[in-house]
Image (cartoon, rainbow over all chains, first blue to last red; front, side, top):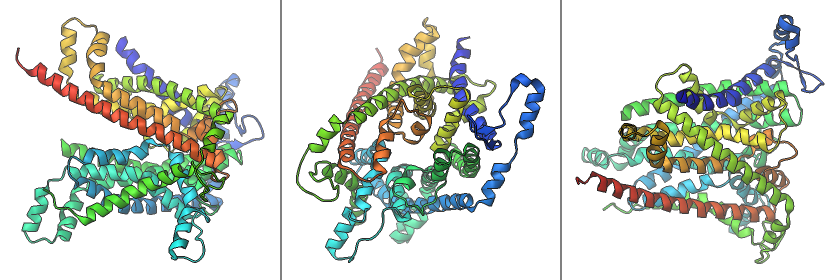
Length: 296
Length: 272
């Protein structure tokens, strides 16, 4: 009995507040928009009995999904989200790897402090960290003032409200997610392997490519997924740092829901977004499992 | 002795400069006298004064803290229970679905979680406000709690609990007297993580709130959309200060606890 309760409470909570809401989204994505409250139809009418249930299912269709394919705003937004996520993941890797590498090769007594310095920004509000860049990247912002003072540029660069600002924001906020898994892979690495490679005639550079990179492969893969997956659905960064030209699906969904009040289309956008995410999520899980098995 | 490497030193300096300079600039400009955030006009604390007089911000801060305390506490209880089930209960029907539901919210985009919960609340006619945000935050943060706690539960030596049961403890007593103190550091960090996630969340709160409850991130977001303002810088500085003090204290406390536990374990192992 006690065991049953222990299982039932979190189980029912998740069914009620995670599974059922998701089924509702699925159902509304198959409904049509209507000028009513709630603004979609059909409504399930259980009082009409079996007939009511049948007419309810008969009225569901894939109209919204067809609409998503005809209006190029949507597939452009999906493609551009994927593109932005891909590019920013690579940028985060390029910035994060040297930092993780240097941390793993620093003196052991320094490592806990360095690790805490990487984690600390993660505990600070995401919104504040994105906001910090608004004052830096603005036309009359500090970066432009600095570059003008250096004499590198003659007139302010437009960075805020462009995709460049979005990339900077993503690299900045997601950097800890890239550094931590790579660091933990590199930290476990046995230094004598590098010495062996050098003894056997590798240059330091080729020892890095032939030994260090393959040994940190799992960390790199994990870090890339940890950045790539959440960035696809990102809303805060494109809406604060991006411009009207920045198309990302999280922003489109938000606007579809709050500005256009088109719940069925917003739900259809969400369903497709999830279908896109399933592939990287499964790949990520598989990588994690392989790593666990390798560690035994 | 490791060789000093210029490459590593440069990577660390540039990397940490990139992580910290934007925050330092944010803090410095909160003490700027000018309304323009980008022009320095002398030191002043006037924006902190304005912030304290701004009742909307104070109300929003109060709502946010209330939501965060409630949701992280419920999430910690539920998340620990869920872990206990997954680690101990062995097989039961629906186990796969259960573990799937625990890990899915971790990778679910916030816009989808928010949208789906809002549609549920409207569907069952629940008035949106503090209660609905608490329900929403509990649901996604219990998954984070369970990830943090499960690593500790897996490594925990079950024979200690069995010993307590053999010595006449009820299962609940065994949990309270043996298991809980051992997994406590993980439970506490799970609670802290849930608390921070709730304080921080904009997207899910925006979907699930009603006109009666505005949280601080919602308030900040609508202010920031219109551009930078020194008041927001002052508010950010206060939040950064709280987090910094909190994280440093927590890490010192856990370090001490770890040292104490190691000592206790050494004492216990010594033959009498």
